[in-house]
Amino acid sequence: MDIKDLEMRALDVREDIISMISGAGSGHPGGSLSCADILCALYLGGIMDVSPDAAADPARDRFVLSKGHAAPALYAVLAHAGFFPREELKTLRKLGSRLQGHPDMRLTPGVDASTGSLGQGLSIACGMALGLRLDGNPASVFALLGDGECQEGQVWEAAMYAAHQGLDGMVAIVDHNGLQIDGAVTEVCSPESIAEKFRAFGWDVHEVDGHDVAALMKVLADAKAARTGRPQAVIAETVKGKGVSFMEGNAGWHGKAPDAEQTASALAEIRSARAERSCA
Image 1 (cartoon, rainbow, N blue to C red):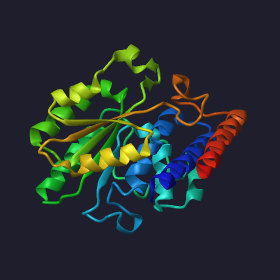
Image 2 (tube, rainbow, N blue to C red; image 1 turned 180 degrees about the vertical axis):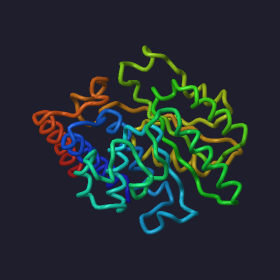
Image 3 (tube, rainbow, N blue to C red; image 1 turned 135 degrees about the vertical axis):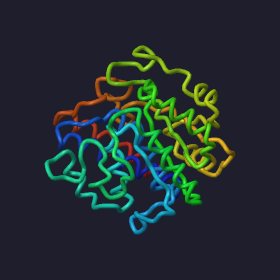
């Protein structure tokens, strides 16, 4: 899939995110929209070696959505990748649905780890990467964290462990959108500079515009291929609520659903962006 196609697919994913959360009446639009480009690069851009036909293949790459509240973005991308029908996205957070508010690896095709309690995902990824190395398996493990999540001490315990063990088969991606449920990350309890912290813990660090799909593809491919004896961290600069102007940079959209009028406005904006992009 070329870059333009990936950019178009990311707009489709953003439309799905808004529709899903609006239909459910609850969810987390801000952080789902901010990581849409990252997930599209991983799953639809071919960075990760994974497919519905080989979902249980031991040689596949693994992904951990440590910021589990962004499940709508992951579900939308998995649907576009063919893990389940796109129509099923309408069942988000419904009783009996496979698409619960946070990822459940027992229910949802393509989900490698059950997450939602912030701070734990990087530890899960460490365990996966160490297990793969012990098995002589060269598969990679990717973990997506939030910047607010990096206030959790367990993140840095896992970072220390990954570097100590030389887990160069793992890539941590930080969705650095600057906001969390209570406001600006730097005002709530600043973990900055996150990039410098990962460097201090012994990681190779890459920084990138998290909405520049071409740049994301290059940085993620380089991080996956590095195998320097050190784990890789990608700090992706993003905008919370990206693609919906009244949600962008607004912490109030961390965890609430748009009403009918807001939904219509958001979808119209995304569709307008798609039309403009298709003519570019």
